[in-house]
Image 1 (cartoon, rainbow, N blue to C red):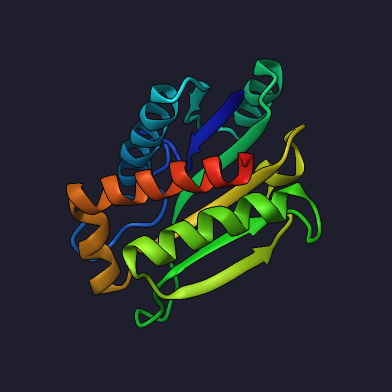
Image 2: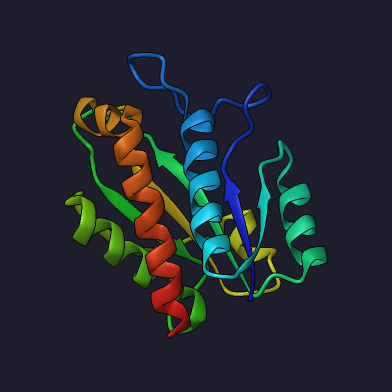
Amino acid sequence: MKMTINGGHCPGFDSGAVGATGLQEAVVVKDVMQRVAGYLRNIGSDVLEVQKNELYQITDASNRFGADLFVSIHCNAAVNRAAQGTETYCYSLGGPGEKLAGCIQRQIVNNLGTVDRGVKTDRFYVLKNTACPAALVELAFIGNPEDEKMLADQAKRDEFARAIARGITDYLL
């Protein structure tokens, strides 16, 4: 099984959202991406890790790789600093992308106890332009003090990574 794991945003080019302590989304998601990829490789998956500045570079790399599924990892942000929790996106409801998003969402919420903001649809470029089932997971809100503390914690990042990997394996069952 070929899988593309994308760390959203690109360290050094696009930090993504930044928390009050200076924690950068690009740094958090790179770490989680690498951990997810490692867990998936341990069970025999062929994994492409991609973290580029341009969205077309991400989807083109995944499509050239021939990925059977695609997961993009992000940290959420909102003007309202009270916003918190996990939400996972798919391009449309009723298909394999929704199933993949649901499996990942359930694993994160059930294992980390984050606020369940549900599975949602959006026409994000990476969801629209991948040639396989795709999901985009917003781990937690980097602008929320409690969520930011969790995202800064190495052990919690590992828990997020394990939950995403388990969500992917749930999807494959």
